[in-house]
Amino acid sequence: QPALDRFASFFSCPLLSPDGTDREIHAVDSENNKNLQDDERREYQLLRCTCEQDHPMARFGSGSYKTLHDDPAAQGLDIHAELLSFYKRLYSANLMRLTIIGRESLSEMETWVRDLFSPIRNFDVPHLRPWALRSPFGSDWKKSFRIVPVTERRRLSLLFPFPPPHLEYRTKPYQLISHVIGHEGPGSLLSVLKELGWATGLSAGPGTTLPRDSVFSVTVSLTEDGVPHWLSMVQIIFYFLRKLRSSSFAERERLWQELDVMQTLNFKYRDKEREDSYSQGIAFAMSYYPVSEVLCASDLFYEKFDSAQSLRIDDLLDSALAASNLRLHLVCPEAELPKQYEGGGGGGAAAA
Image 1 (cartoon, rainbow, N blue to C red):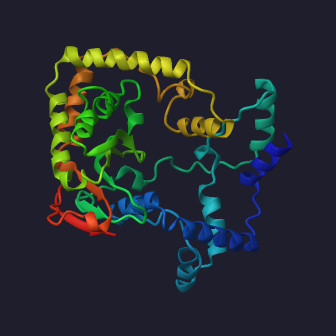
Image 2 (cartoon, one colour):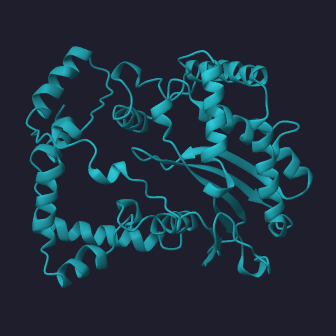
Image 3 (tube, helix red, strand yellow):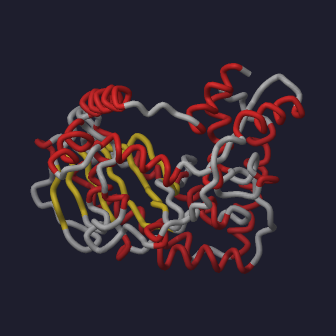
């Protein structure tokens, strides 16, 4: 309970002192400098900075001494005053979700929560601010990028703006698409690419979830021999998408039933998770799912497969996963960049 008391105080009565603010700015700057050579972060920042510029997704996602101290000072802003203003405007109880895992009884933990977290004020801040209703993915986002990594890596990523998974959690049409494209068995997309000697791994599915958007990605880990054949791989991926589009209701229903069994077994017998990550995941889910379903909403199917679900899969394949909706990343050492790189999805650009 003492630790929980200190944790609750972070939100109800934080010190937010000038000295503490300055120390945290230096800590953020230090972490940012450490991550400057991280290829994953560099690629993600490229994804962000090419979003619509008036959307928060386009902002610098980390922070540095320049963005948190020098730039505000040049604009005549007091960063400590801005921090206090941010806290007073947005640290509202109606926007917060809390999950506690402990050995004590539910009634005892509930008493703790009511006593310790009730002082957090409720300003009735709107859950979705206006920016959340706009898509950050415009025409400038749907281009092709050649990315020269810091470390030696080779990867091809096809990225599509996609509806957020939580809006369709009861039927999960994206699961069947992810399953077909990401399957690794005989006859699968990955098995074909491996047989050609072009790839070593593949993943597919939605991510980068926003309130009204997400990004569906198909990512292929390339061999050195596979890099020159990036365009052929794109064509093969779209061939598999077309095959799924032409599949029958019976074929999809069989796949759905297989997925339903797998998801149920995985949920029922999954490994024990660390308490910190598990509680964080539940608190996150509380913002998107009914409280009665937060433990299983992202895992289980709630409805039987029917013609409406099959039509929804067709709609996603025709609109969201169309070539006109594509952003492409080709990551490889500079010496291996194809000499005649043709951009897809509405244009080409280079990033290093």
